[in-house]
Image 1 (spheres, rainbow, N blue to C red):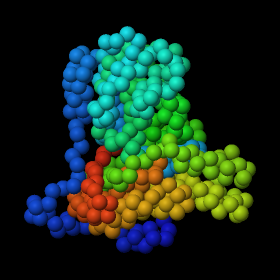
Image 2: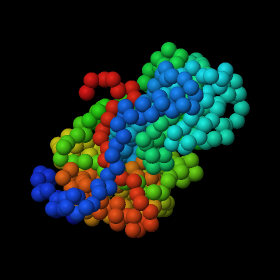
Image 3: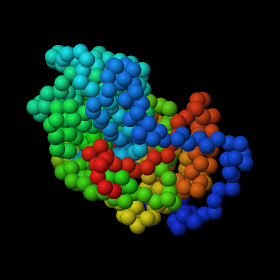
Image 4: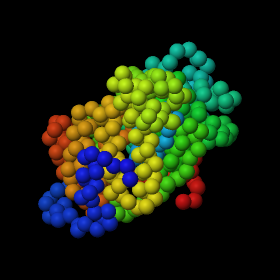
Length: 425
Ligand code: GLA
């Protein structure tokens, strides 16, 4: 088992049979409301999108595109280093309702989350769209055009239960949902590889984030009740069971909105490439402790490389822990991953570190970490199910005191990716 330092101490105290007594505090007795926000059902999002299409564009929906957000259980900043990741798709979705366009050669879009409407001229191949959120639409239309699929004029509504800028990959959800709408509207079906590839290229070229392959792949390929083990060197994958009534996965938003395009993500990526080059490796995938000697004079690069090396090992240990149903070990690995992201990879921030600490102090919490690119966004905590309401309430109350505003908190389940939604579970 891969667990050292602070984490090993906690693990030693952990009852891995998960048989601790139910929490003593009941919400109704204390007049406390659960802080866990209910998850909007998918059919309600679909209905909302359809109804908004009627009111905004006076047309009936003909095509619907749906894709989930994601939480990465472990394997952070390893994808663009040709390593391994273990994300789940979550039951928070982006839903598009679309119909043939009312204006020729134009895609008109209303975003319910932003309360904004925008138009994309299909003939204009000039600069980037002035509204940043429309660049995803622009990017997907352009990428499909390069595949020979010409998107027609559309009227479209976007509805989403994935909070934007929270590190839950709202952008990949939008890209994949758009991919499915473009394919439905043109009656041309791309392979999952082509769909994922178009989404990644759109993110890189039009949203300006030099991302890896994780988010778009899990949004398309995830299977319900499973995490996706993805080898980012050759994009091979397998599904690892991730379901137990004994544990719940809590997502708590730090309230700090991350901005991956702002440059820090690209800097980390460049540091990893520089570290690999200095060690004579084609990527950090094959890094072993012995290689780190070559980086002795480069403290920063050495730390970045060490994170990638230890994180890849933690992905493998996590797969073993989940397969064995050892959720204490799984939680310990999550906390250890956070320490590495905080100390070696430097992609956390004070508020997120504080939130992780608060979570780890609560009874029933087996481990916690930042998830996604970092620099803000969400923290995930693996919690014994019987404690989840109590823990969530305490974490949110204490974090609200710290940050000075209320915080969003919800549980997530591992759901199917957009390409797997109709597949039997
Ligand atoms: C973002 C990127 C992913 C991945 C994560 C960090 O979500 O889009 O490709 O690099 O950050 O693990």
